[in-house]
Amino acid sequence: MVGPGMERERERESERESELEIVLRRVGLPPRVSARIASMGLTVEDILATPSRELASKLRIDRKVADRLIRTAAEVASTPKPASHVPRRRILSLGVRSVDGLLGGGLSEGSFVELYGEPGSGKTQFALHLCVRAMLPQERGGLGGGSVYIDTEGGFSAARLREMAEGQGVPPDLALSSVRVVRARSVPSLMASLDAADGLVREGEAVLVVIDSLLAPFRLDYRGMGELAERQHALAEALAIVRRTTARGGIVLATNQVVGGREKRPAGGYVLGHAPDVVLSIRRSLGLRRILGVVDSSFLPEGEVLLAITRRGLEDVDEKL
Ligand code: GTP
Ligand code: MG
Image (tube, rainbow, N blue to C red):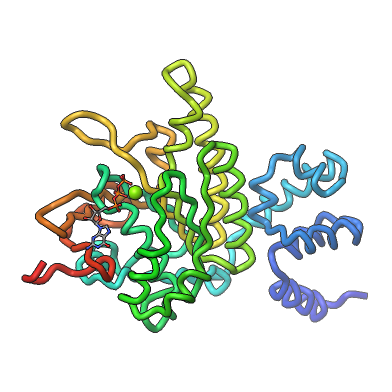
């Protein structure tokens, strides 16, 4: 007999279960399949982000079972949970007063940020600076974590990373070992790199993924209007991986070139248009000075601030600069 006390006990028990455990229990998978899921480190988000056919072959299960698994994951994921279960998002400070002010303290975990600007405006410098800041412990505004730098244009410089690390008080050798770099020129290699980066975020090896720049491989692999539809389709696939990474709490920074004549706008068309949580622009001002702007965000007011790119990285502007 199951009394009301026991029911409550069971409910309490389930509060301690992870979302994935609840899904597996409800679907009632054979233990070897559950063990396979656990050993692959799959999360509820992964199950939701994987097409049913692919999930079935990955887990060596029937399509019908895969469908049931996805449906149950969707049910569990959409069940309202106590606020105490909502993961707390930490903020990555850039350590530059003007920029942190513009961004409401910094960049929030789980956000997809686009940064666009002309050649030489400072996109790569911004990205390297962010990698260094991510390594700092939380009490110094960082996230105490590594980064993945997906370099599609060959702009990554280990020497510059080392110099910026010194400037921010991070041991340069630590900086070189906690930023993992991968060169991706083509779209397939970008996809593979995004997948690998997502895996590192899942394993807690990285908190930040930089794609510098996102559009370059697409521009090389797809040319002209004739291939535009295919290009947008592939770009949407890449953005789906980015979403998976941000759903786990990773920050993804994608740099972007500008197109257009006098009216500059970011490349990529409508597929990229609404994907980022925050769109930032950067442009040159006098000397080392740059102007960083919030162009589009659902939670930040638009605005612009001055900063400087110096040997140490990004800095507030003082009279000397
Ligand atoms: P593209 O990749 O060509 O689109 O440009 P980008 O926007 O990535 O520009 P990047 O971040 O490479 O910025 C280049 C600019 O940063 C240079 O013109 C310099 O003004 C500045 N910069 C780069 N390295 C240093 C450095 O070591 N010290 C200082 N003070 N400034 C630097
Ligand atoms: Mg660059």
